Image (cartoon, rainbow, N blue to C red; front, top):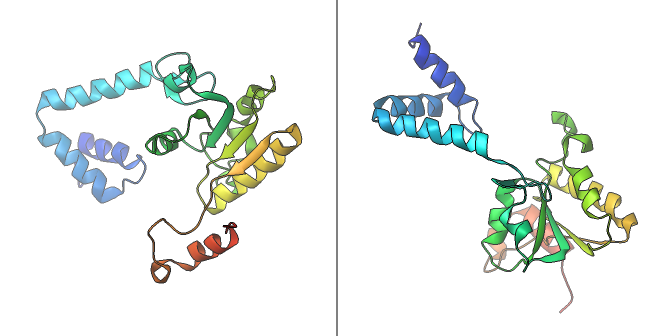
Length: 198
């Protein structure tokens, strides 16, 4: 046996984390073994508390400690606009620009038939329920410009348009300050396709 059984089990569990391969899992395991006992126990306790204390917001499906997240409880937010994102971390990216003042909805994934993720696995029913009272006038689809993100945006557009709500998607293309000769073909194609009149 290459590793003692407890070490092998620790490495195997760390390897199950996203973007952690065998080498990274080994480095993390050895780091944890070298770290002072109180630090490792604190990490374990923080993970336990987070797992027990956090839940999904009943309105937007973001991660929160309470029934509704801080954004949904904020009376200053524009309740007529909902920005649909794939994961909770996407909210942080949009909030960093300090421009969007509407609400969010987290799907917890993207359509991916190859991975067995269909509409039933996403939090779409909750989104449709939010639109029942007619107060939502625009849905912004903020999915990544990937095959799965594009497929999800297309599906949502077809699902939501018949409800009489404006459906938009984040623009794609050249980055501000970018140079044409450094842009890849997909970026240039997207920039050309989504050009706007000036």
